Length: 612
Image 1 (cartoon, rainbow, N blue to C red):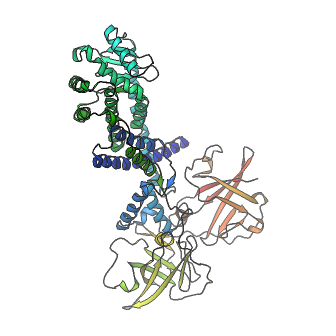
Image 2: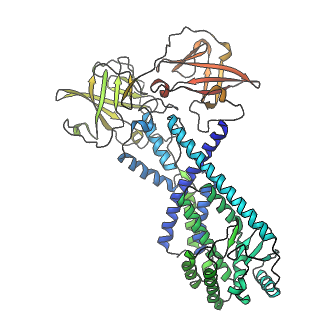
Image 3: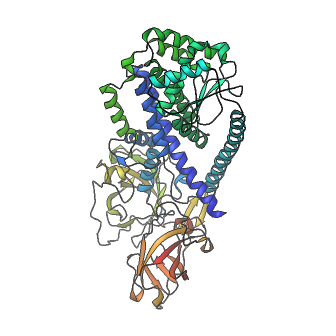
């Protein structure tokens, strides 16, 4: 049950991501259509929708600098700077949350998530996960209800249609054969007249059936049935039934998104106009008016869409009649063909829309600035203590005690510096004149000044704008609150004491653990582990661990003794358990991140498999 719900959540995240990106592209296509005003031809307008279909069908696409989502990413970053960043949104600021991401990359990952419309891969809170699970279950339930309804309705209708005899009017069959011959269609096409449909329609691709309403000859004279046949055979020739199935399936999957529903509806309308154009290409010029009058006559009498899945109907709704008649009136046989400009524009749009943004993700970014950070520790009594952020300025001289330059919420709330070069609750270390970030390889200078009877620190802020874009850093202004650093974390207005484990254990050898262990999963409880099923669908932050003799681990921050892995910097002692399952050895490694040390959460487990 747990695994099933996990899969539903994962698929929902994937569907939601593709649904949002497709919505953006639908807006772009509607803008292009508005600007071009039909100058590029109906086939080009229809072909644009295939970009949406491919985007919805292929959730993961290659990254490219030419992707339209790079522009959206840039816009998102600009908007982000204007929006206040709440501490609860990102977990504890500067903390090790789930995947041990620093504050700088927390922000950049969020921006990357906006540009690629992706979900965070780390467990933020139980509440967040429960909301996602609830939404996923509602989405899945909606699909089940819609599928059951469509299945029942279509089976009932198809059974009724099969019971009807073929349309045996000899003249109608002769007209149909003439239309097939003119369009070079050799397949057998059955005619059935039935009261179960409200509009002429084509059913099936491999065994095509043209369905005609029971009173069709009362509306369309038999000599004008050729226009109906030309239209429905055009659907067959263009293989529109297959596309209709794809559209129907996507409508069910993305039932929650009105923008996608609207886009797919417009695609269906363009499909009908393309069929009008193809049908008219097989008629004489003087037949264009008669074809248009036949369409108007059908729309007047048959305005309700056919409910059969995978069916193409000559009439869908009255809302499209004006556009269809205008397109028929302006029909030009040459306009049905692609122009060179249309082909070039379609290729450019495909390259821009069918690729993802070149995301600058943690560990994969093109880093512009890398600072020297291997400074020896030199004490500075002035910096030791608790500092509270009061402003964020471009230059140190911009700071005024009686006014604030930065109007939003400050991302950095406070910093605490201990006399041993540590900055609790962050990834930072410090030495005299330097605040160092080993995760991002940045060396931030700080300057301490006494102003108006208080002590202020100007902390050079080197975020992704500095490391990736090469921009000049700005400054956090922090006011000294106390000469004693705080070892508590402020969460929702409450002071929560940081958890510190006993770490002074003597070394005890454990030959079973010696060697390399590769991460394969991340689970909430040991009993959830299934060797052949990966429950964690995101990237695993912890790639591997190599245990060596005498308590050494290839990760310099860690040491080990029997049953424990010690992190002296975070002051955590994490248990490991080795089990043999199906002939392979697995280690269940307790993961104590900021969720454990600062928020009191129960640790999850990395599952590592022994590498032979």
